[in-house]
Image (cartoon, rainbow, N blue to C red; front, top):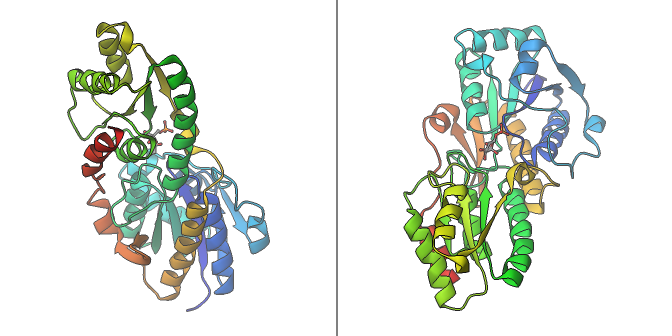
Length: 323
Ligand code: F6P
């Protein structure tokens, strides 16, 4: 494979693991004789000419950092009709002949649009929501779950001291993955997600049942995109009586930060290496993903026409294990 100039973009919501992934792409590309250019600020950087040459030593000291040193953004211009042709023209003008895009579903849709304009593109899934089709895990999910767990463990101390109910809101506008998994591993009485229609009465009944079983506290996890939000749940609990006094904690963007976990660093390394291997094989317009223990290649077309849904069986598991 002749030497190529590869642009690297981090796009959409940042996810812990983006930095070690950038490092892996740059260093593996150098091993294969390619040059790498960092595109600064997501697709906006591509359109506005934000480029920086990245050599292996330039990505030293970022392995353990959360966020992305390339910066990121949600670029609305790419969805306009002229967006993708303009972005590809800008990439070509900067001498790029392939792009590695590290990001979530919107970013991979952008990657697919660029591929449709003749650019060679490899996608790497990164989103704490774990809603990207074609991979069991996306970068950032494991770190975000560990962050949630650490916070909930702390809340449990005060919840049990005061014998209160805590309503914890996790991220996930359209996906309940984080809330569901956090529910199972932190002992929630009930988990409320965008994918289901849980009523206030069901939440009150779950908390009531915990009190009947003489639990000192109860924990309810609610994904931010659920139709039944934490405030409404709190109102219904208040109406149920003093024994149901509750407090709300919105974990918010803290879930997107922090040093990537061991799992995310390893996944970042494997995805980065696999992206360059794909380029070396002449394969393109695909996303690398985790399939069981192996790294797979899935067409970008397929990735963007599906959505990975959370396993709702775990909702019941959470409730069973909280008893
Ligand atoms: O896509 C990841 C995510 O963190 C979602 O869970 C959340 O709903 C959204 O991004 C928040 O986006 P922003 O940082 O743009 O407010």
